[in-house]
Structure formats: structure tokens, C-alpha cells
Length: 265
Image (cartoon, rainbow, N blue to C red; front, side):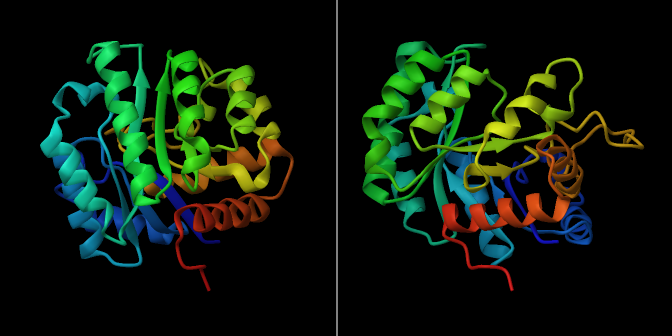
């Protein structure tokens, strides 16, 4: 089994002391490649550096999360455009809209999201997207650019069936995390995951966040890490009514095609 974690925040401070061990555990659980999420200018730079240290195992995204939209300026845009020229940077993002917490004003979020949509068009790279409580504005803006970019994945999908079908109608990919394992808020995903075509489904941990609640034993530190992607894959396979080998093979092939990664041997 060869798995690809399409969303791991490996530059997070919780990984600073033991990243090598984290990567070893991931490999032992079949997670051979990981996409390191860039969510700010500095975070994107760090993700790029980390990917360069681990060629063929780690790749990076470059973008600014809507929480940090107020920090986006011309210098940030120029830096992201420079990062996007690096072959190790395989997507633009994490970008999108978040009206749940509104850490940045909604008008600013919309402007910054559109700047990064244009950046993806200019760079010819797919989008790594975030959306929370902003579906209408998000879809309306994304639809204006969707046919100009090679791909778009709605990362950490937790939304409704209507939202899912809107994304699939836009030919988007869907990223599923351990949220599906949360009996308090993720049970609807166990039904919806069956609706995602195999060539549109990718899997991710969003580590160190969203530790799957069905992992046993639960680690005392509560930190999620890429090794648990195998557990998420097993849960998704069960919900889709297919073997773990099929879910793993399909999600890996889909991620390879989406991010332009070499095919695993």
C-alpha cells in the first residue's frame, strides 16, 4: 500500500522536535509522500524549504489562508509567484473563504482569494482550497476561474450533500480527512463519501489537527500525524463498500494525476 497525504501541516511547531520520527512512522504505515500545506507567506516559504530537504517524499503548496488575508500585500503576491515556479510547489493554496471565524474581513478575504485564483491561472497550477460557512460566495468566485486552472481540490471537505454536488459539478476534487471519524459532527460524510467518484477523491490528515476519534489507542498528546492516514483510508473504504487496497490505489493515482507527481512503482 502506497498512500499520499495531500494535506499535512508539517511546518507546525508541534513537529519541530521529532519530524524525522514522524516521517519514519508515516512510511511504516504506507504513507510514502506528503503535501506540506502553506497557509501564509512565511509558512509557504517554510513548506518549500522542507520539501527541498526531502525530495520525492515531500511536496508543498504556496498560498495564504483566509484567516491571514489581512496580511496579503503586493510583496506577498510576488513571493508566492516566485514560490510557484519551484517544481516542488505543486499547488496554490491554502486559499479560499472562511466566514465561520472571520479573522479577516469578508471583503478582504474575497479580494485575496481572487488574487490567488489569478495566481494559479498564471502559474498553471491547481488550487488547494478552504471553505467554511461561505459556500455561496466561494462557488460564485471559483466558477469564474475554474476552467482556467488545471484542477481544484476542496481540502478537508465537511459540508453538505448540496455543497458536494456543487463542487463535483465544477469538476473539483474532494479531500476527506479524519473528520469522517467524528461521531459528533462527521457522520453525514460516511454517506456522502459514496457519491465522490474514485477519480475525484483524495485523502489527507490535516495534521497536527483532526486526530481521528476512532483511532485506538488514542495518543495522550492528541496530535494528529500522517501515520494515521492509513486509518482514515480504512474508514473511507468501509463506508464506500470497497476494499482498502482499492481505496488506497485509487486515491494515490488520483493525487499523482492531480499534483503531477511521478507514479509510484
